[in-house]
Image: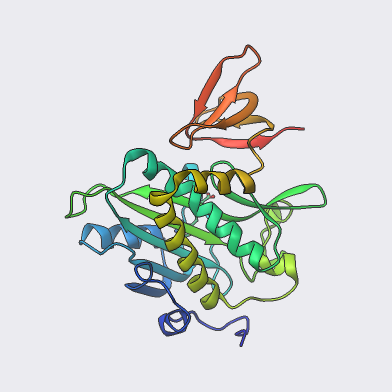
Amino acid sequence: MIPDDRSALTAAGIRSSLKTHVLGRALHVHQEVESTNQVAMALAQAGAADGTTVVADAQTQGRGRLGRSWLSPPHSNIYLSVLLVRTLPRVILSWISLVTGVSVARALLALGVNARLKWPNDVLVYREGQERKIAGILVETVGDHPSDKPVVVVGIGLNTNLVESDFPEHLRRTATSIRAEIGRMVDREQLIASLLLDLEEMYTELHADQAGVVAEFIRLCDTVGKRVRIDLVGDHHVTGFATGLAEDGALRLQQADGHILEIRAGDVVHLR
Ligand code: BTN
């Protein structure tokens, strides 16, 4: 049954649909936190296990990429952070952030939302010629975990049951939600459980068949093959043609003089 607008998220509700072996097996569900990434970081520093998952109904200081904030009102969306404690080669580690976008896009496609990816991992919907962001992903590295394995927190914010008028004025043309796209509410607990299962499978596949995962990313991503402008940190930008991805997932950008840059952080603007 789809809960009504104001029902709370519960660990029992998520567990009843959860089919994973590792992700979400240690599950912390909060009504409100500053940031689920921050809670997951603190758990990591205390030695939490691989797959530990933090979910909140609301965030008071949701963090976005490049130092931005993430809109996080209660009772409506998904705010989720997963801790990965794994021995992964550096090139694979950098793909975690990209393949997380693939899982989120696939979960949305299964619900009938025509989701696409913009490098590195913005999840977008195109409506009336306008790009609208439906989900964002923030991967942060944890400095000191008691194990000496590389540890990352993968944070996902997914606009789920907000209606258009719930967005602040300045986001109404550039953001959307599942409900705004398909005209009905979805069960957040079931969606979290199915997303965790797809993420678990993607992270395993990344080890076994990196080429297959890269091909799936390219299939869902609109950036490669386009002319783009990339807004870099500070007030700089570069423009060029996105020719493909480097081994570590960096975007290869061919500039007008033929020079190829490899971009590892920035905001992509698709040009016509
Ligand atoms: C972006 O700017 O595109 C990334 C947004 C990531 C937001 C999610 S919400 C759950 C997790 N906790 C946070 O504080 N941020 C991420």
